[in-house]
Image (tube, rainbow, N blue to C red):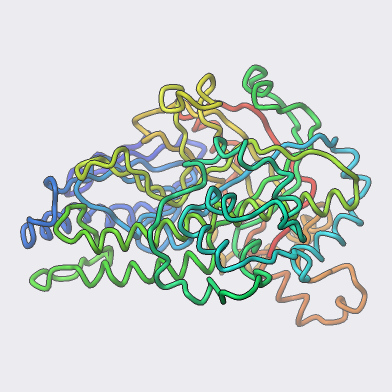
Amino acid sequence: MLEVANEGRVDTTIFATAEVPIETAAVDELVQMLELQRTAESFAEAAPELFPVPPEIEKVAVTPDFHKAKGIPVGTVLATRGFLVPQAIGNDINCGMRVHITTLRADVVKENLDALEDRFRHIFFAGGRNLPMTRVQREALLKDGLRGLLNSTPRSCNEGLWRYFHESQMEKHLGRVDGGGSLPADSTEGLENYLGTEDRAVRDQIMGSIGGGNHFVELQYVEKIYDGAAAHAWGLQPGMVTVMVHTGSNAIGHLAGERYRSRVKALHPTSQPHPKNGIFILPNGEGDGAEMQAFWNSLNNAANFAFANRCFLALMAWAGMREVLGDFDLPLLYDAPHNLLWRESNAPDARVIHRKGACPARGYEAMAGTEFECFGEPVLVPGSMGASSFILAGQGLEASLHSASHGAGRVLSRGDAAHGFDAEFERFMKEFRVVTPVDLRRPDIALRRDIVDKKLQALKEEAPYAYKGIAPIISTLEQAGIARVVAELRPLMTMKG
């Protein structure tokens, strides 16, 4: 662990062993971010009535996949009292991970990769998702998440993906989604265009979108079990096929985020200069309750969309696999955000945890009364494209603010990764199955170098050499007491937008 010196004397710890590279630019960005403490104090001097308690950054924890972003590094976990930092959850609200287990074996999938690729390309990228939704369903989803969607969708609605939705036993598995996948909002302001018309169901073109960057849907299999008791309790077995989904709220989240960030910026006292680091805060008091409620409405609208988006992407994978491989079950293991806020209570002076690119890793006490109270919260940590992913059990380490890495973490920017490394990338593409909207195996597509080169460049930005090795990340989490490894998963096929 490394303590970060800063002028505000904010308790700040980077979790990294000697094997984990630490980017100097990310440390500089972190130190500049910590000027938030002074921003909050100056704001409180100008408008003390807006703060329920003196504003304080209680602690900052930085996960080992820490890397530079825009203002606040990815891998930053921030605990505050008296105020919120909307920018401290990233642009893609409730980006997160979802993992399902199956009754399939890896060799069955390996024997059918060509047929699966064709079906997945149709379902994910060529109009095959077939998800008609009414305005009533969309509004219920945005206001109450997965619970709202369940309550607004009758069993008679079974066209397309709704058949799989009903078969998924979603209500039974809501306890395996952080917050039940249902965050309360009393408004959908700003999202009128998404809601659609009153008179008919319209096929949703946004729900079920993987998104760009490092988002994916991946078929994997359990290669190794490290904790037999936890693996057994969670239904994990060697050789079992799993489905992992990594995405968030995409366009809905960006729209909601831009809306509330502009409103938060407008609240900054005119008597105070704008923060040098460009990060604005939202007081947590009752003095401007309308702005606070508007913020939570927008945030929860986007978060609820993301929970459903991950759910439907998993159902799309299930539909494609069943068409090729026949009937099988797809129970949920866990779904957890890594770009979100968590209030420890509803009191105005309660501590608020901000996670930007960090998984919750709560232990036995925090998970009491859930299916995970005996082993800790499932922590879902993917490697880079083509590398192993890991399922761990959270240990509830307060020093890390009950948080773990959400992945391997970049070592190259997307621009740097897209140029050079041609031999490494060519070798990777020969060894690994990536399904994209463009079928690179088709002879007619191969003749269109403009199309091929554009898609290959996007894949190069996410190639393994652009990321830290996953092994040192996992080792750091275990050595620090943040989480312990339960199982290692190896990829079979990845869908990338």
